[in-house]
Length: 253
Image (cartoon, rainbow, N blue to C red; front, side, top):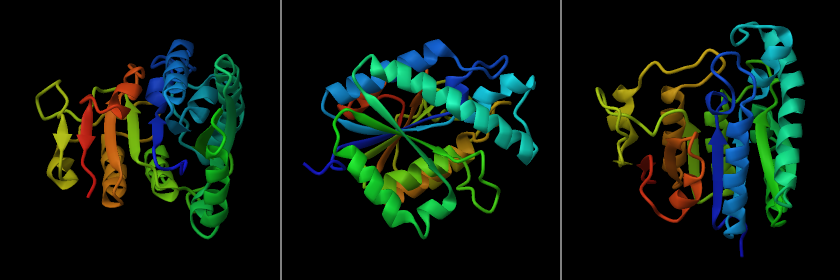
């Protein structure tokens, strides 16, 4: 079987992985996510994880009370936090007999070097008990090298690998209509809901719903079914892959 034929890209944001109060890793949230992804793989699905949280994980080591805005401090936080994040993932996934593979990317890797990256990712996907964990290389990437944020990175990776679906996990149940706390179940045209965006960016994160909708637009334009769902309920990932209507589903073009 082509490893990309049923490939799911799962993106999880800093707001899901870290505590709102101080930006440190939320161990319980990470355990739930790893357990859900292991269940997905045990059910026969191939998946990749695009994980934020490196900068947020490193913030505590620098005694900061918010996301660093200067480049040097942000990159230093990423250098500390990425190691901590991967150590956590590696330890937890090993309980399920799954090996993690770290892939750090910049915009250039998805440009002139995309063939090499694609080959590496597809090779990793041929191994049933390896999960690639992808992040932007925040410790070295400056504005000229950045993809944007991990919402954009996940949609680019989904297209690059020919994924079947992209699931963006956030702190909301999905895309919410104005004045409502209930997610919109189905969106056929992303342009119709761009005005629904709320100012929801957390102090330890970069992207918000506007960024997610931009990523969704890129993915659906390339034929990839995309979902926005609650990252605090990652056990629903398998349900989404089995066709259940959870969160907000965006139809591919």
